[in-house]
Image (cartoon, rainbow, N blue to C red; front, top):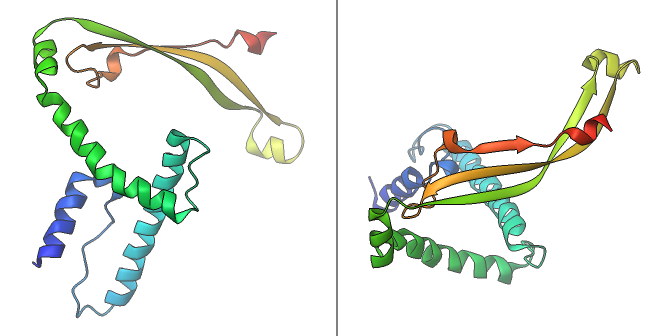
Length: 167
């Protein structure tokens, strides 16, 4: 296996969310050209989705259509993730890990829903309907202070206020 192929395999193993289906084609495979085109398409789509997510995190000032903005983001990602990986090695985190102190997060927002009355067939024949609505929610999460991102899904207390539906 070539060095770049083993590097690619390692990176995809560490980042399963961007891995492509199937194996890397051998150079003499009958459909190698199509497989490589499919893999290239997969990575372009993954990059586009990642840039859309980046814009939702970074805000409207980040324009993924501007090459300089994309390049700056790509240069910043590896150093940022490397720093995050080292956070657990900080002495203060080590001390906090030994404590049984818990922290509580309170997350609020709105959940958008589509309500449907009747079947899809009823809706298409104008005897049913769909309407959009949104409801406020609150999620309370408790985590160990030394491991604030180690969240147990079972420990999340979620409540959605649907009282406006009845108004």
